[in-house]
Image 1: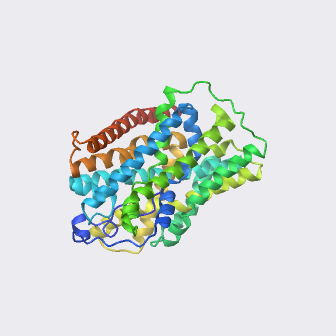
Image 2 (image 1 turned 135 degrees about the vertical axis):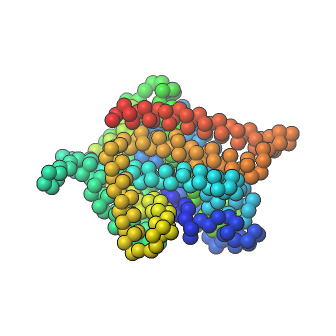
Image 3 (image 1 turned 120 degrees about the vertical axis):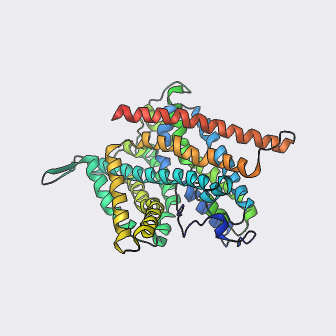
Length: 425
């Protein structure tokens, strides 16, 4: 998952009725191929490291659940496009919420998006801390009465590295760097394959004989959903497309490619390590091998490049509120963004459980963003489809089926993830 655009703010997301006159949507300039690359980048992310663990939790048949989640998120992506067609003034995901439910809808959508990107930023710190601790075990630093060691040390060091990148007001360079996420995801999969096929790890991991593990399905469902939550970027992709009629085709290609990548990594990692696979498959890799180091270092670079993109939408809104209350000040952005980074460090150290935290994000926030909210907003804007027409009856069945799947994932996955986090505290 990747969010490469601001989600809400005075400049980035004006209310629909203020953004442009109705019917005045300007055609975009992005080609079909470029939009596909941006779409794949939006759907590619650190979730690829957790799909082997998700498969170990749910069993082999949970791969069908991965396909079902991909199909559901693809369809809700189409619903987002249709909501964009309803009003040419709509530019962002929160605009859709406003078009459907007014200001409460905007606040609801924005709250889900902000909470999601904040916890993803926390996950980035945990991810890099875990992998750096694998590369440099038993590291420690003592500064007077303060002692930092292991994962906590690396979480703090990574935060110190990314903090200056959050001070930049223009993220053009970072957005360009983050486009390497597509390449990075493929490199990680190929590196893991090399470890198995060439470096001698093999495919003989001890896996459960049960095709389906009901107890682990909520965790698996949450992690699978987390992989496909790029819906905050879809309105931007739609707006920027030169030929908007090809938006459904573009989405289909993006979801197929990403599903193949996620599925390949899930099967590969599970065959290699079986039920012993960790929440990040890179933590299982032999650290001494060159291919393992390539996979781990590639994993480290992606969060470093995208961290600022995660926290900037939140920082922008906070800064706007401060400017309204106290006026402009050059030190405000630096102070706000530094405190925001510090808060993610505190959460990452307090909840250092990457798999369970991302399962919680997927089960509660991502399910809301990519399953429940698109369906609810679509029904509000267009009304319930008629069951008398075969086409609309199929549409109604799809929408209410997705709502049922999303509700099930939200309830069971959130409860399971929270219980696991509490158990490991």
